Length: 137
Image (tube, rainbow, N blue to C red; front, side, top):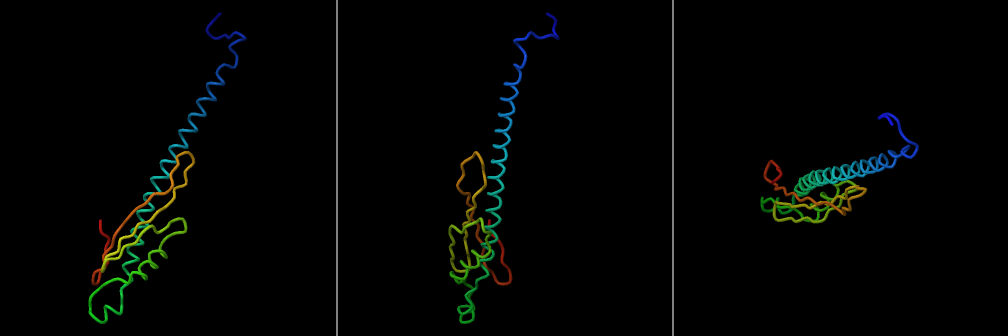
């Protein structure tokens, strides 16, 4: 038998191997997509936490400020502003207000197919200062 000819028993023997290769490549592609989805959700949660913290420090307790000249935050208003700044697929896990500082924790659920991930969380803090509000790291 020459190198280019096949016997009848070998016909179609490559198909199961090709099917297995295609299945493995498909699973690998979905896993890469899931890892990317988790990374993107983590980044988005961090960005949302920073935005929510910046929104929360806009809640100046105006009565206290006019009476004393001291800057401090109104905790209920800070919470409302932080929640309002979030998107529909994000949730506020925690907010802490201490004087003129707010720390916010945001949770976001990544959309994965094979990797079971409930939520990713990120926390950020901002401090209210006279004339400027800046994020803390």
